[in-house]
Image (cartoon, rainbow, N blue to C red; front, top):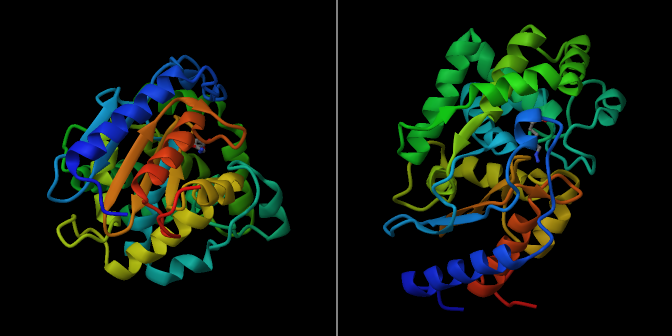
Length: 314
Ligand code: DON
């Protein structure tokens, strides 16, 4: 399939946004974080960033949303920069086949989380960043600065009400952090690591900003060089195998690209050597990943031939 030119790609995005608007089944908005329960499910946005091209958008691409677990990609990149491969002594690289907030494997596997994208694993990577910067304020500044550099946008900020809402209700994450501590796999006090983690999840971005922020993972020559090419490969591999939790196989089957979802309804997807795509629709599917976002990415993959497994549609 020949790569789509800007006009063709814009027409594809407009079509996908229209189909999403017309779909009566929007999924269910996450309600375990009270601030997110109030989000209007009737919103949809998609943005495609490619070096040397204008970032193309459709739908509500200028509306900020809570990136939640998409932030785990940025924290992993920073933690790998700080710790290198020693990070893997503390966290694994296998899909968990369990929900993002599952506790069961952590007990069976003695406090070493399966991968850096389930909550337990992300708490470990955030803990590593916190140890490298000594206090939550410094860790958050490092994470925010990385995200702003990646997106080329200094306006990106943290929504403190969303963070406070999760601090007040995040009992499972506190349980995970204490469990990690009991196995000697947490270097900082749980409330400090989790305070940092909840604030990092509460970063708000528009789809346009998120697509731009993912460019460093495309490996394109003129994308921001925030991590080494070898590390880009590894982060993409983890996004493909673990980025959608127990829905990772389904996302690989439908879309065939590395992606990371968040319960705010955002998904960041990387088309290696080509593009970074952000999609946002707040209603979730049964895995806790954006329902319409996943379907939109399947359409985009089919219509553009963007997939690491080949270009043919069904
Ligand atoms: O830890 C939590 O529960 C949230 N801050 C993030 C979870 C999340 O986004 C899962 N992704 N689909």
